Length: 499
Image (cartoon, rainbow, N blue to C red; front, side, top):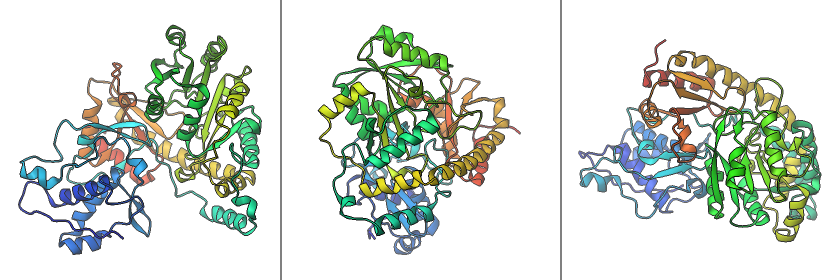
């Protein structure tokens, strides 16, 4: 446990919990508090600093809401991974609360803060807005990325892990195949065919630790300085990754059917990144007509490809599941990306990519020497979890849980229909509210923060202003039913909703 010395100043302009918050935040940013390090309990730190325990609770709650620390049940508070703090801007020598107080500035209302990105949701957040303190810290975070871990089958996972380690031999601890263990790839190919209609052989599948790694491999396969089209708005994390490749990114506007095809011809792009089953963040489900248009465009030239990100296809609440775009691809033009992070748990960090045969040859030539980034033990556990039917049972259970939360949030939002239009309710773990009257997303977010609620703006998806009406995302996956009702109630107060 990290023991910290915090010098609190009383009688100044900066309140005590703000000083505690700033001190811990600065220690994390400077790397003096390392990822995974345990913080003192709120009771211990309150006794040590001779302050009320609620003062420390406020500081810890804000740090947790901003992603600097995380709470682990029955264990305490721990510093989050450094990777999760990427994109915070200038990290060297940040100002402290006491230093600003001496200059007569208030850290919570300081303007002109640089924007940073929530790397999991892909949504940009203004640090100045995120740091606003109200009478209470943020307690209801409608994150569009969080999932419900209460339904995770821990006992099953432990049993599979124990069986694998008990029967393990030296082969399990060898390097393994670059594309991932063949048994797991066979299991994934069978699962994709039965659940998503994907047609592929195990040899076409590459297993990796997260989509970031797979996209980096894809850059080696497609080459540098590729001109790529992305939906507007889109998943900002992927947008930033493509930027880092020096790709020429063209943002293409959407209509009710998804990405428009005409600009792809006009801009002469080589690849298009799409999310046809449930577009993030708009929630649009691409109909078969538009899918066939995209496939025809890709077939128009030898080196044109569609990158299909099927990030949360398992969670659809109305109608039958929508087959993957790859299921309609007969010419080998779709690169299919999927992940188990949202369906099982973020910590699983197992993603997969299905390459068409022409690109598979390039992969083996250009990237075949890269080792698989997923532990063979983790691959074996996941393989048993899917192969033996546990994954399907887990999905059925989670669909019921999420459907219940989805319907509850829709019920809670009925009074909001006087001022907002509701969309994106057919699939996924978030809904969208679009203001009917002129207002800004920043205004909506700020009012929510002052009531202890965090929501996310749609226009933050690309950083471009496309003239859209103010729209916010409300994720429900990580909230309990009680939190959904309480948070919706707070939003009614914040946005002055009657009824």
